Image (cartoon, rainbow, N blue to C red; front, side, top):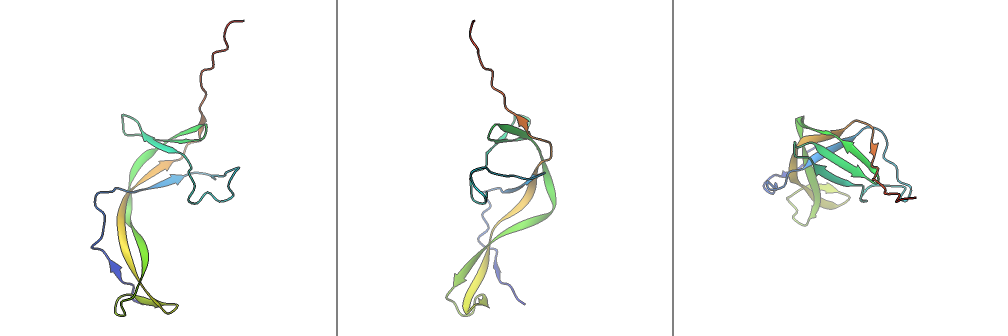
Length: 121
């Protein structure tokens, strides 16, 4: 089977990475977290990734991937010579970017505790 991939549209200005979390990520509000806001990703001055999810903080590390991943976007086309037939429609895959790095968060999340001033009694 032949799969046509257009590599001329690779966005070289954006750098993507895979985020790997150990354990389960559950939400009380949404049953499915796909496409939802999860948290904030920051980097320390030493380039250590820090992920803040709710009232928890995770410290991770950035490692290169052994084999890069290609992020593909499937598009339907009207051109009869371009792409494969899928349910009677033509489609072509375009490479959006190549992923070379992975952010790993394998430690348990730590709670963020704010200093609360109780005042004078």
